[in-house]
Image (cartoon, rainbow, N blue to C red; front, side, top):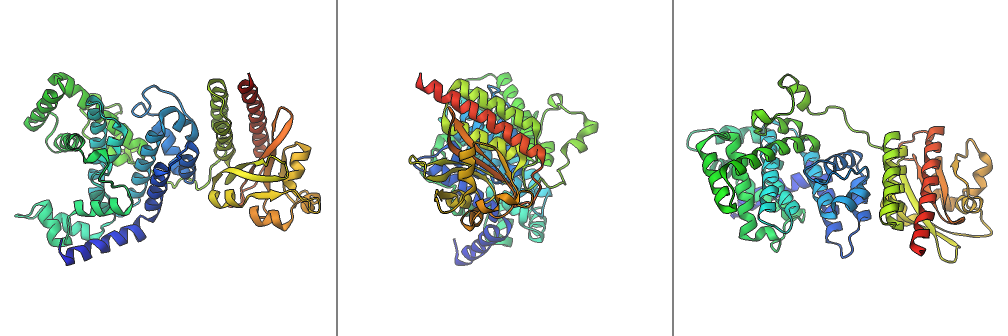
Length: 488
């Protein structure tokens, strides 16, 4: 690579990282960091996903799809999804959602829609082919295939006028895609992809994808998606490809064709669930397999214009689903931390709060420290939320533990609570109203649940209080039952 090429490439990488996709880079790094940790937990991954309301909704939606959840185990929470369909699967869904969410916000749409359709289709075919060849991790093959053309995807999303010039040059006589890229950009888009994967720490020469077997699977999947798009399912090139797949996997032509058609239909549905509606529309699904009316095409595949809420909205139906999952978890395999996180997600997403946490008393019952926090600024809140019982200073949290009652703490409405909110407390949580309730097991307080809407400045109304109280009540009953079961 020449010095000039390196300079041009570096400039594009810096622009993408710092101006166009900083949030994606951070999300990728957080997800990869969780994955590479020596002790990775459902809680760690859930924390990353739950920071973004839109990502959370899409991860749950995709996690319930037949493609990633063939056993049809319905999940309503991120924590439960990790338990039910696997840590690695939810991780890869999160990466896919983060990528698509960022790309569809880009300025250039035409070329991106086609490239994204091709990538999602190829990734779906690759996972299926990997399963047939007994690959150790078909889900990993899916995400590797999806990210295989990340340089192209990112460039077409954010290239602006330069992208339009490149399209014109690629369509000019005497130019190939590669030669046009070399001349106009000074580098090729696959080089941009390699550099971005390295910068975002999603490239590892020791990964299984470096083996010739997995590389062949990914290349074959891209051939299928490209030929289906450009030449059609009945073309000679496709027949040759079907024959190649059939011979290598001991399948008949009809079996291969049926599998590829099914995968194409699955890819189209998956693209919609990921938020790439217009890409879903152009994935080449055989007409007989379409499950929507042509007259509804435009409406079904129009990208959403309305921005998703920044904070979770109250959702009564979700509360009920989470309570059912809580009961199921207690019946199946009572685990204190899993139960607590299900409850916390129910408070955060079901009641619709900005932040939620649970804190436990220290063994000597003189200290209170947060164990897990969800929502905005969760890491900082989790680190700072720790208090010591001091006879000389009143503290609202130790008062709650003593009284074993659920409260809406609003000093404007209940000024008598003001002495229980010293600067040591307000310096951590602020001065806005909040919800708090004790965690009680077998009649003994062991900690608290806390939630607020301090960031969005939304009101904590009576319904919010009632819903919070009910979830906490069910949690305490469930926790008591789980402890009783463990002692048997």
